[in-house]
Length: 469
Ligand code: PLP
Image (cartoon, rainbow, N blue to C red):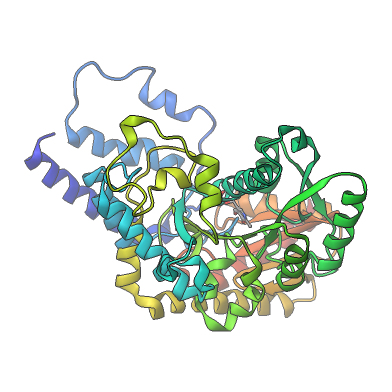
């Protein structure tokens, strides 16, 4: 493909993308293919000769679309949202075209410097403490990670390194280290423990599925008495199961007294904190050593963009610093080299997405997006509450409604299966304290009240079949 062919191919693709996203409501939200379907369509090996763009383009509908779960359909209510917007897609195109690898400042100064500014802009939008911002002139700052899972893992390693340094790098203490999170924390927290060979204790929550300070404090005392060394805590703001919030203020005070690293996982809910009315959940953030949220979930910035702020970046840099000659440059030390702030060496120009989206929507446009989706979830909650065949299980938080048919787990499992088999809407369940729960999340940017109504009618339509089966 030469430059002229690229111009026409890319324009055709842009039209295709806009048509796809504008008409997505008409496609079944879930695919009907069976495992292995693609191999049958495209064969076992790459073509020997290059093929014309027209053939490749035509195969998008034939090969790819049948196997797409349409996450941006307004009928998609599963998991949590993943963001999508036109300015963000434009930024990804530019990022692909520039194709820089910004591991050090000199490897592309704009890549590092725009990221620093965007992390400060977003920190201000969220009203985070000054010490998380580069502009404070301290040791804090922000970095874009690929995912919340990486953010947790990176901070766990940094906290481990900090503790080791305090013990003269005596590796004998490693098997005494212990970390904590709530029983409701995301599986990526458990995974970080597995990868870092650190024991992570999942602590019980109160009746609101919130981890409380006393529970944490009691466990720490017990573990210290048993000769263990507590060092790291994850507080979740907006759990995956039910969007519950750990009691950050209580946990923060315990972490301060006990000198533990407090990491906040606000992967989904964090985006809502750009709206002052939801910011009370952040009370206690001043105690945190690190704070993470995924703008790629709810802030109209496409995957991957997981923003992590660290109060003292020295701990991460010291944990990850290796310094081969081929990566050194003469401005080293004057400005961050982000290679020290992450696990991989290479990194894409992801802050372009933040810059394009923040400027296109403005803070108010992003706040409107969050508020609209919360209102749509309220609408769904009202529909559920008005029907006495159903019960709402946990208080609705933000844009997630957790509900179930009154009755057995089995009947609810059947209902979820029927909903997803019918492919008109898509929901995912969860299980808390033995109870099978249906999660209904407002996800796509284009979701409207008619889609909430459509989903509710679909669920009600399938109840009789559920009961008849
Ligand atoms: N933490 C929470 C609370 C989540 O809800 C999720 C995903 O939904 C994650 C972490 C993992 O996110 P990621 O896919 O960015 O690793």
